[in-house]
Length: 311
Image (tube, rainbow, N blue to C red; front, side, top):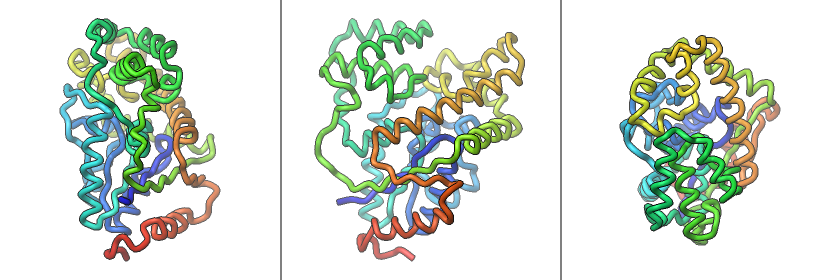
């Protein structure tokens, strides 16, 4: 059974730093489990690791797409499985790091994501027309009435993911969250980081302020200027909230406050998803003394004798 270690948790909790630390210690490599870090030139708003950090450990599935390319959970699943196979063959433990729960769940549950469409062209055309018209809320309403389980678990800012979930349910009669192949293909140890609410919210607020200082506004302006051709990237938290500023209908501080608010809400959704959908070994970083040493011991036990090149 192949071994996979994943690090999950809400935004800004410290997943990336822990992932680099562990990959270095165990001679592993990192697979990004973030749906936005795949895009080139979207660095600040996606909280991508710095160039220096990316050099410390080999990272996969970062900067692999142009912003106008479509990238689906099925694409992630296919590429991640291939990388996991290769790393295990080379005695390198894979560390999946990221907060996109459905991406990770597609691997853990071995989800059968099926073909590219439902076979109902009229349905797909009508849904794509709503997307083209910018009617995200309408798509959300359709999903909520069609598949409440998916509505509670997938990224509701991603219109293509909503469309896919609606199609899957209309085709199979089952939620996209239940499309499991049933075969366990790998052994997963999932580490969850969390923090006290006030501490976490303070981390989020500080991160947004730091992003603004690093050039988030300029990066978001490039997204705004090309929003007609980048249906997925334009809906990312950290970008869409700044559009009113560029349109001259809101001031910058109000837009930054909106990013902070939406990031906090996103963090709550992430925690809910991971707690309800996966078997996670949780660590409150403000309460567990030397939690990294505890995690090191558990990973060593989890990997067992499979790898002969560990420290």
